[in-house]
Image 1 (cartoon, helix red, strand yellow):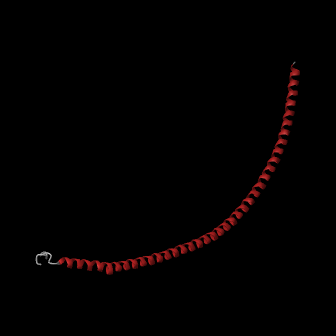
Image 2 (cartoon, helix red, strand yellow):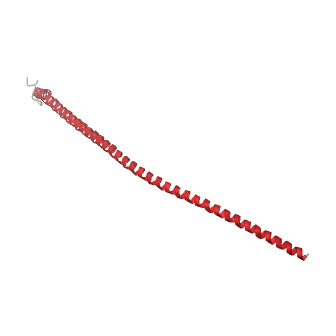
Image 3 (tube, rainbow, N blue to C red):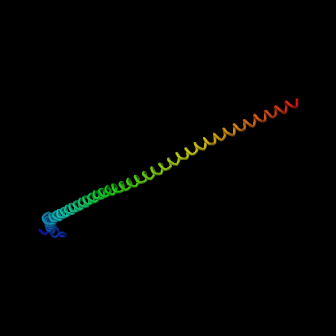
Length: 152
Protein backbone atom coordinates (compact mmCIF):
# COMPACT_ATOMS: atom_id res chain seq x y z
CA UNK A 1 0.00 0.00 0.00
CA UNK A 2 2.80 2.37 0.64
CA UNK A 3 3.93 1.73 -2.85
CA UNK A 4 0.69 3.02 -4.27
CA UNK A 5 0.76 6.36 -2.43
CA UNK A 6 2.69 9.04 -4.17
CA UNK A 7 5.31 10.25 -1.78
CA UNK A 8 5.62 13.73 -3.25
CA UNK A 9 1.97 14.64 -3.37
CA UNK A 10 1.10 12.92 -0.16
CA UNK A 11 -2.50 12.49 -1.28
CA UNK A 12 -2.81 16.14 -2.02
CA UNK A 13 -4.74 15.51 -5.23
CA UNK A 14 -7.98 15.26 -3.35
CA UNK A 15 -7.17 18.33 -1.35
CA UNK A 16 -6.30 20.28 -4.52
CA UNK A 17 -9.46 19.10 -6.16
CA UNK A 18 -11.39 20.03 -3.04
CA UNK A 19 -9.81 23.50 -2.95
CA UNK A 20 -10.49 23.99 -6.65
CA UNK A 21 -14.08 22.91 -6.12
CA UNK A 22 -14.44 25.27 -3.17
CA UNK A 23 -13.01 28.21 -5.19
CA UNK A 24 -15.27 27.41 -8.13
CA UNK A 25 -18.24 27.06 -5.80
CA UNK A 26 -17.36 30.41 -4.17
CA UNK A 27 -17.04 32.01 -7.62
CA UNK A 28 -20.30 30.48 -8.81
CA UNK A 29 -22.40 31.01 -5.68
CA UNK A 30 -20.94 34.14 -4.07
CA UNK A 31 -18.58 36.25 -6.16
CA UNK A 32 -20.32 36.21 -9.59
CA UNK A 33 -23.83 36.91 -8.19
CA UNK A 34 -22.34 39.77 -6.14
CA UNK A 35 -20.65 41.12 -9.28
CA UNK A 36 -23.94 40.80 -11.18
CA UNK A 37 -25.72 42.65 -8.39
CA UNK A 38 -23.00 45.29 -8.34
CA UNK A 39 -23.20 45.69 -12.14
CA UNK A 40 -26.97 45.84 -11.94
CA UNK A 41 -26.77 48.55 -9.26
CA UNK A 42 -24.25 50.49 -11.36
CA UNK A 43 -26.54 50.15 -14.39
CA UNK A 44 -29.45 51.45 -12.31
CA UNK A 45 -27.34 54.33 -11.00
CA UNK A 46 -26.21 55.16 -14.52
CA UNK A 47 -29.81 54.94 -15.74
CA UNK A 48 -30.96 57.28 -12.93
CA UNK A 49 -28.08 59.65 -13.71
CA UNK A 50 -28.93 59.62 -17.44
CA UNK A 51 -32.62 60.27 -16.65
CA UNK A 52 -31.64 63.11 -14.31
CA UNK A 53 -29.36 64.59 -16.97
CA UNK A 54 -32.07 64.19 -19.61
CA UNK A 55 -34.56 66.03 -17.38
CA UNK A 56 -31.98 68.76 -16.69
CA UNK A 57 -31.21 69.10 -20.39
CA UNK A 58 -34.93 69.21 -21.21
CA UNK A 59 -35.41 71.89 -18.56
CA UNK A 60 -32.47 73.90 -19.91
CA UNK A 61 -33.86 73.59 -23.45
CA UNK A 62 -37.35 74.63 -22.30
CA UNK A 63 -35.91 77.58 -20.36
CA UNK A 64 -33.85 78.56 -23.40
CA UNK A 65 -36.90 78.36 -25.66
CA UNK A 66 -38.87 80.44 -23.16
CA UNK A 67 -36.14 83.08 -23.04
CA UNK A 68 -35.84 83.05 -26.83
CA UNK A 69 -39.61 83.49 -27.19
CA UNK A 70 -39.49 86.37 -24.71
CA UNK A 71 -36.55 87.94 -26.55
CA UNK A 72 -38.37 87.53 -29.87
CA UNK A 73 -41.44 89.22 -28.41
CA UNK A 74 -39.36 92.04 -26.89
CA UNK A 75 -37.46 92.46 -30.16
CA UNK A 76 -40.73 92.62 -32.09
CA UNK A 77 -42.09 95.23 -29.69
CA UNK A 78 -38.90 97.31 -29.86
CA UNK A 79 -38.92 96.97 -33.65
CA UNK A 80 -42.48 98.32 -33.75
CA UNK A 81 -41.44 101.19 -31.44
CA UNK A 82 -38.41 102.04 -33.58
CA UNK A 83 -40.48 101.78 -36.76
CA UNK A 84 -43.10 104.16 -35.37
CA UNK A 85 -40.40 106.60 -34.25
CA UNK A 86 -38.74 106.53 -37.66
CA UNK A 87 -42.13 106.85 -39.35
CA UNK A 88 -42.87 109.99 -37.33
CA UNK A 89 -39.38 111.33 -38.05
CA UNK A 90 -39.75 110.56 -41.75
CA UNK A 91 -43.13 112.29 -41.92
CA UNK A 92 -41.68 115.35 -40.16
CA UNK A 93 -38.73 115.42 -42.59
CA UNK A 94 -41.10 115.03 -45.52
CA UNK A 95 -43.26 117.93 -44.33
CA UNK A 96 -40.14 120.10 -43.88
CA UNK A 97 -38.91 119.15 -47.37
CA UNK A 98 -42.29 119.87 -48.93
CA UNK A 99 -42.38 123.27 -47.20
CA UNK A 100 -38.85 124.01 -48.39
CA UNK A 101 -39.71 122.92 -51.95
CA UNK A 102 -42.85 125.06 -51.92
CA UNK A 103 -40.77 128.07 -50.84
CA UNK A 104 -38.18 127.24 -53.47
CA UNK A 105 -40.87 126.91 -56.18
CA UNK A 106 -42.37 130.25 -55.19
CA UNK A 107 -38.91 131.86 -55.29
CA UNK A 108 -38.23 130.35 -58.70
CA UNK A 109 -41.60 131.61 -60.03
CA UNK A 110 -40.80 135.07 -58.72
CA UNK A 111 -37.33 134.91 -60.29
CA UNK A 112 -38.74 133.77 -63.65
CA UNK A 113 -41.38 136.48 -63.56
CA UNK A 114 -38.76 139.11 -62.72
CA UNK A 115 -36.44 137.83 -65.42
CA UNK A 116 -39.30 137.88 -67.91
CA UNK A 117 -40.13 141.48 -67.02
CA UNK A 118 -36.45 142.49 -67.22
CA UNK A 119 -36.09 140.71 -70.54
CA UNK A 120 -39.16 142.51 -71.87
CA UNK A 121 -37.87 145.86 -70.60
CA UNK A 122 -34.44 145.19 -72.06
CA UNK A 123 -36.01 144.12 -75.34
CA UNK A 124 -38.01 147.37 -75.45
CA UNK A 125 -34.89 149.35 -74.64
CA UNK A 126 -32.99 147.58 -77.40
CA UNK A 127 -35.85 148.33 -79.78
CA UNK A 128 -35.67 152.04 -78.87
CA UNK A 129 -31.88 152.06 -79.26
CA UNK A 130 -32.25 150.28 -82.57
CA UNK A 131 -34.75 152.88 -83.75
CA UNK A 132 -32.53 155.73 -82.53
CA UNK A 133 -29.49 154.16 -84.24
CA UNK A 134 -31.53 153.80 -87.41
CA UNK A 135 -32.43 157.50 -87.17
CA UNK A 136 -28.76 158.37 -86.74
CA UNK A 137 -27.80 156.18 -89.69
CA UNK A 138 -30.48 157.81 -91.84
CA UNK A 139 -29.29 161.24 -90.73
CA UNK A 140 -25.67 160.40 -91.51
CA UNK A 141 -26.65 159.03 -94.93
CA UNK A 142 -28.50 162.23 -95.77
CA UNK A 143 -25.63 164.30 -94.51
CA UNK A 144 -23.15 162.30 -96.61
CA UNK A 145 -25.41 162.47 -99.64
CA UNK A 146 -25.74 166.25 -99.22
CA UNK A 147 -21.99 166.71 -98.89
CA UNK A 148 -21.39 164.47 -101.86
CA UNK A 149 -24.04 166.28 -103.82
CA UNK A 150 -22.44 169.73 -103.06
CA UNK A 151 -19.01 168.46 -103.86
CA UNK A 152 -19.96 167.30 -107.31
